[in-house]
Image (cartoon, rainbow, N blue to C red; front, side, top):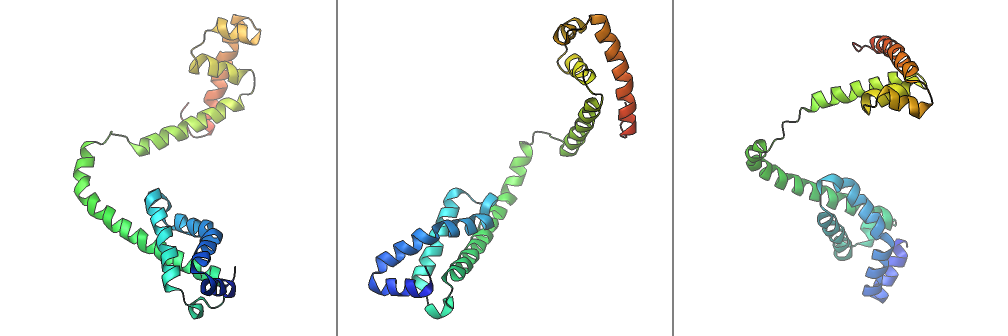
Length: 187
């Protein structure tokens, strides 16, 4: 629908024009609003903002303002409304954050994000080095040290003798230590 079609429909039947505009551009407006508000807004805030966009378009529509491109006009209104809503939500959350910081501090779970990130990186490096060992050594290491399986259980899984499994694990651990040292970890 272009600006001329919408203007003609609006003079013929305002209800049909409103419905046609909403049907054609609701998804577009929702996407614009969601991209601006996304994580900081509830679904109710987003839906309310979408309604505000269509209300502004309906009550404030001027063919001269649209300049012939109704989609551009709708997009501009949607972005402007979403940005205003974003600022309103941020102002409201900042005011409540000031009063809840003390309360939230008492509920802190003591999580050390930096230590968790370091631990995750070390695990990634360790698994990468274990994979570098190749089969069946990597399977043996994981089964032995991650799943706490015995040499006898691993031997049965891999159709090997328990003594062979123990010897391969011993050699694999030596190679794993070398790989970890090369990667910068103390193995």
